[in-house]
Length: 297
Figure: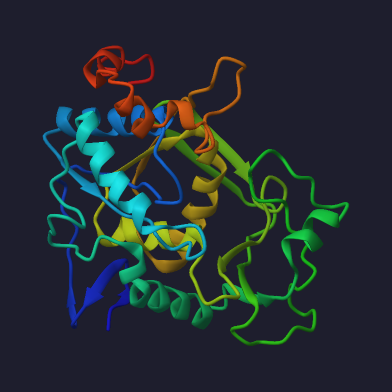
């Protein structure tokens, strides 16, 4: 069984020392068809890995049991290959940090969860998302996680069982700062800009924040390239890295792609899915040409 200790992922009793080689990653979730916005962010990630003679890892983030479908996994591989992506490690080709599908990595997340429990960083919460949204102390900004009002925070009475959600208790008032590779210095105040967040769900599945921290550390990712909508998530994740004794990677948050009306692209934009563009005989090299030297590279 794997466990986390002293900033290193320990497997079979042997610690894995970090190296300095660049490791980037593509981390799609097979909950729908990939669209042009995914392709642009992933292309920037690939170009940054190539520029540093690094390794690019493909990770299948398939933890959402209700939305992840086998047909979307198949489409993911086909569409990424069609567009011109090439990775050196992944579910299809293996590598030193296998498995590369999150549904096969639950033992790593459980080890981290147990470590956080033993350290007193988490507590059970019986509040539903609707409970949080109904709270006057929980304004909902876009698609970001609403600010949790602390209803179940100790010493509040709650049932300590695994049928509840488990939240990470943030250090209220602490300034969490980092320098982003594109957006520059970022600062968020714990308890004001974001609250206690879920790391383990009531259906016995790790939440996004915990899973990506554990995987990026285990796979020795040196730079995370993703959309700028996740800047606030980076602040949350930095607190998890610290609590687990792990060294965080660098971060580079790309500008989001929008449709003609200025709405951020989502998987509901079927006309801009890679699958539909492929069916329409769009040439990916024509799209890539405009991204080879993007403004935020």
